[in-house]
Length: 379
Picture 1: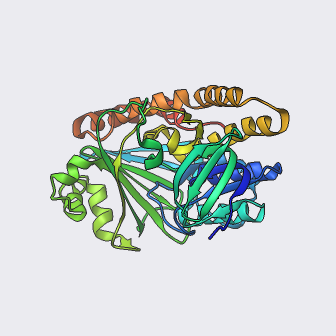
Picture 2 (picture 1 turned 90 degrees about the horizontal axis):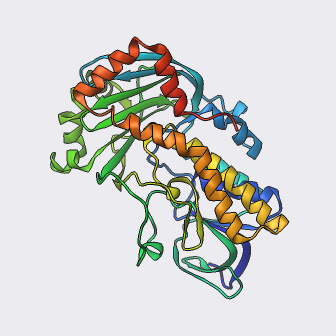
Picture 3 (picture 1 turned 60 degrees about the vertical axis):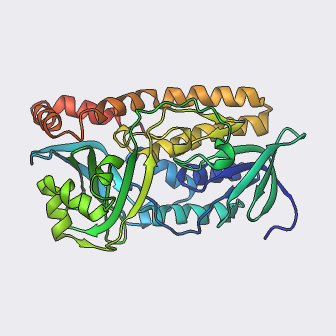
């Protein structure tokens, strides 16, 4: 327990990928950072756990020894319809698999070694702007002061920020749930599959620990119509896709009980709220078909780190910092987000998805173009 107020250059609420990567980059430049994480590492998160190769060099630059982790490299894609058609495609850039259990823990250890104060099992209860042009932060682990505050708290806006807030983001009005298992199926290590079912889709790909991640997204309506019973919903809805039925009935489940998140909305982006700079899912929940939100969160951390370094080292004003970050964020992600929203409209529908996949199977050039829209260049 902290017994007195401690001061830092930058505070980060949330220790997911974006927050951890931001903390490490700032610490590398001698900027003092405190990071607040409500859980204790290592722990699991609902996440697809496929990362495009655009992020490989960036993660290595942070100090993550990826070459020594012998992670699966993924270059084959299969997308199925509920009617049983499978589109096959070779990924040009491709990606790799790693569980958030391992990745977040490793990054937290790197951050700590580089001087970041990673405060685990810590909830931020309240904050206020102080007369020093910074923030006073009250947490379950004591009081802190920071000159800059960043939010990497994920899809759910904390209560102390949401009270009285007129949210500017927009969503399509639908409420989603995310469900994740780790399984041991008969599936090549270099292959990722995306399986469609009514009002949802499920991704399966190899990660570390000799596991495959099986993670699906569907509407809360599907769950409600099946008595709010996950297993019953899977049998009634997901099993209609023959590929998914085979995985659920034949694969070994590492843990029979899934990790579940609810009340997920895909909101339009924002990069600042009440003076707090936002990144990762806090800056707008990205549709899964935008292509690996993990890489987008990490890329956002690099964009924000560059602007924060200009602020701390070169005297950039706070107003310029916020404006430059917003512009750079939009330039980096606008096309990917637009592509993701259009692609999402093609998936999770029995007939439309089947027709779309059969059409794309005859047009490999178009398929490659669509996939490329959801992957960025190496950074």
